[in-house]
Amino acid sequence: MPSQSAVEKALDRALRSAKASPRTLDLASARYVVFSDHHKGKRDGADDFTRCERAYTGALKHYDRERFTLIVLGDAEELWECQPKPVLRAYANILELERRFFPDRYLRVWGNHDDEWESPRRVRKHLWEFYPELEVLEAVCFAVTDQGTELGTLFLAHGHQGSFFSDRLAGIAKIVVRLVWRTIQRLTRRPSTTPATDACLRDEHDKAMYDWAAQQRGLVMIAGHTHRPVFNSKTHLQQLEEELRQFLDLPLNQEDASYDARVAALRTEIEHVRAKDRQCEEAAGGAERGKPCYFNSGCCSFGDGDITGLEIVEGEIRLVRWPEDDGSLRPKVLARSALRRVFEDLA
Image 1 (cartoon, rainbow, N blue to C red):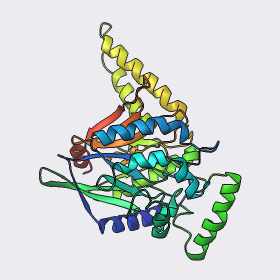
Image 2 (image 1 turned 120 degrees about the horizontal axis):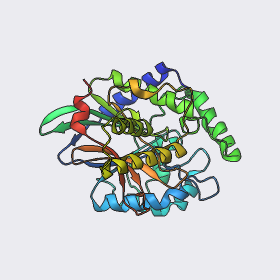
Image 3 (image 1 turned 30 degrees about the vertical axis):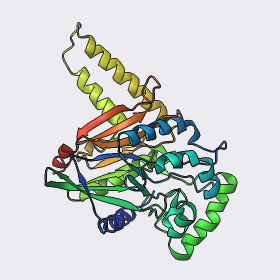
Image 4 (image 1 turned 90 degrees about the vertical axis):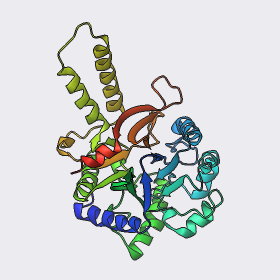
């Protein structure tokens, strides 16, 4: 796990860079969807995206019809294990669907598993065929406004900043990592040690990103990287367990069928989340994370074929899962909050 100071320094740097090209997000008209961590491979046995392709395809068609702006928040391609060309060729259909959003409704951020897109030369060589003149960013920064009032800053980054391979090696050492270690990984299919594959590391990294965001004035951070959805600084599992406790504390009404149905639905959803999100037994819970300053989009490479993302629409931020419980290609809203209220609660 990178030291807290390494994460802070790297995120400080990414925030300064993003603020150099500020954007505005007006809650009255904003229509954004954020997806991350697809890890598209070359359609072989090591490809984590294939089982999620149906859900993501349905999501893209829906958000294009509804005129959303698509933000791809890093690790779109699995370039630790694969060369770019076979991946892009294998998923040309997905790139064509994403191209419907380009150029006016499309933003791309690079992560640690697709850090080749940090290089403008590599972007020109491989991605400009699909997205001419595309610039892949390290981070994106929005000044959020509502009816002319500035609420604060929305900062989006993949979330790997400060990790050993991405930031703490520089110069020759970084070249060695990219040329030698990546080659070893491609030959052995050995993944890098990331929060996505280590429950305790994931908890620590979520905490590191929360701690950094909580120190910033009027800032809300959206990240990916850990493959675990976080809403209002709490994991989806923590949100569900808290909601269940609140329901169970209510006076029991034996005739209230909606009460029983809601409790049953919450328990079912909790078991669903626990089955896919292995917990760290040593982790200190997130109850002390009182500021709603950190959100995480989850991933588009869950083993059961589901994907999660974050919508910003109708003045709200929403955690969504595709597909719906009945398997139909529509989103299930897992959590929602007025974005204005989120910023007000930062104080």
